[in-house]
Image 1: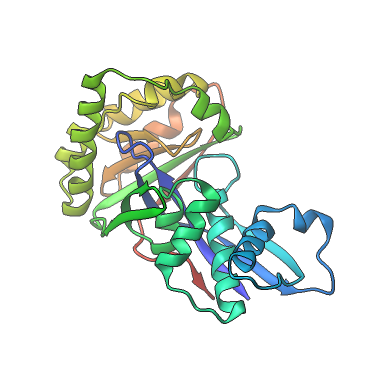
Image 2: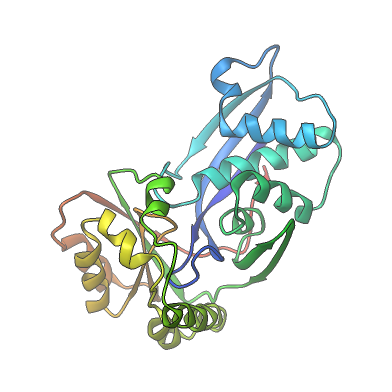
Length: 281
């Protein structure tokens, strides 16, 4: 069985730990029956997620070989771990014959990942706002207006989520919290309605980007480059990838980004938001 899962970008600036969006960049996960699961596979996040599903339902976990192909890079803030988890749960759900609904799979995925901001759009597609309260997940999916084009900037270095989380302060001023709450609400509406001016005006974060940008030495120069072309730039998830959003294709923006002098090497991918989540192919 092969399961295809899209990349996801969480936060979108002020939507820290509660927003995520699915992108047309994919990994394919092939689950193959095996006589015995080898040591490397047993220690993979994919197999551990399959095992989690089977144990939760008092079933015997099958022996497997798992192959992964695709374009989602590891440790770049593009939901690679979410893709591993979601693909494995979709396989386990189908292979076991339980056929649980996607809300149940989201619950399992969140239990494994710890938060729903990447696993939700990986599973459902679209732009999703979500939060976890005790053991219940509240979420809402919206369609992203077709006008938006995303230029994804992927560097040649990794950034572990643990290090990015440690950079964020545990306490913040009340004014910063209010700023993020209001701006996150407006960004959600801007993406849904296609209001780029609203998106651009709301694109300021005070909770994590001012601290995480110190781990991405080209952040400031690339943000200025995007701004000069009238675009919006966010750190993708925990970083280090950066997501630049524009209202339509922009050869000018692409040229500016390509010609910006940086300390690290950056790959640029032109992508679009998608409404479809993970699927068996």
